[in-house]
Image 1 (cartoon, rainbow, N blue to C red):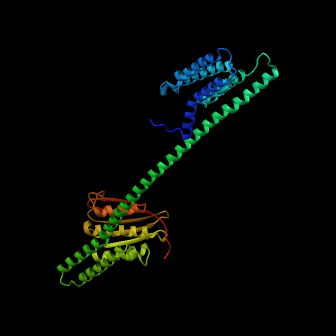
Image 2 (image 1 turned 180 degrees about the horizontal axis):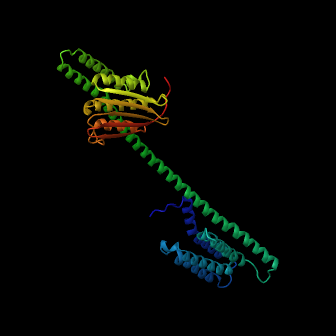
Image 3 (image 1 turned 90 degrees about the horizontal axis):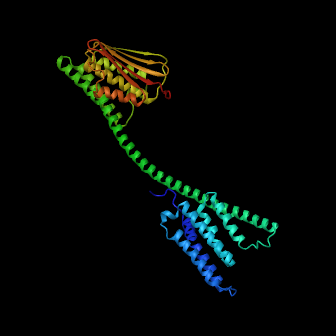
Length: 402
């Protein structure tokens, strides 16, 4: 598993420095010691033996161990204690090996950011200053001075090590947060592109459905009316009235086709609001079908938004077309009710009724889709042989008065 907070380049370099500092300080101390002209009798062999012991400890307790073991707290502690002990022996033998004692400050960083870092720094300071102090001549003031220096050094070096670790840790977390943010932004960009593609496809589908509804509500119904009038003309000798109605329907259908292509509202709504348009629709429908249609408008009339008015008009158009084609009715009624928060459209007939009011025919589906598009709903109640009642409900979203 990858480390979520990988070490920075600075940390990696510092870790390599900690690895080689004991070797460098030990080698430097040995060179200075051997170069000193004041060597007691047997001093050089003792120096070499103690140095070999210190080197063997560094190698055996740390360098030659597997990497998985070197990072364990017990191994780190044993290694540190051994280095400090051999440094003390060498320093008491020859004070020049105080250079080797300095490696204890570097090794104390292995304990960070725990409080053991302060203990490691304090122990190194005691060895460093204790080996230089002439305990036989030491006074209380001198010992207190050394203790004060050790305390300040412990706080400074130990606190600096811990602060450095914590700062680096925060920087790693910050870098990871930035990387996560960049990854999230890239994922969001991909998601945004997918949403745009889906929205484009949905827009194409909606436009196809809109055009299908427009064709059904205008051309198909107009052609049905034309066919009805022409068939009626074939059955009577005086066919002028039916032919004239057919021509009017053809003209209206052509006009609606042009307006649908331009995505405009029905021409009945172009210069009038919904109640007037409904009255015109009802009059024309009654003339073309011969069915008595009663229109009633209740409530305080308010100008509705174009989308609401077009939806109700098209629903009324489709419902009346269904009455003409399927109901076999002799009477029908259309009621438009303004109730304040909603507008109701009810169309009733005394025809044969609908055997399946929840059917999936194109006309019923078209009405439901239109109403859902403006936040409305459609209910159909029908009893075979007793007629049908279609009720549409839409929110009374007001538009600008004409």
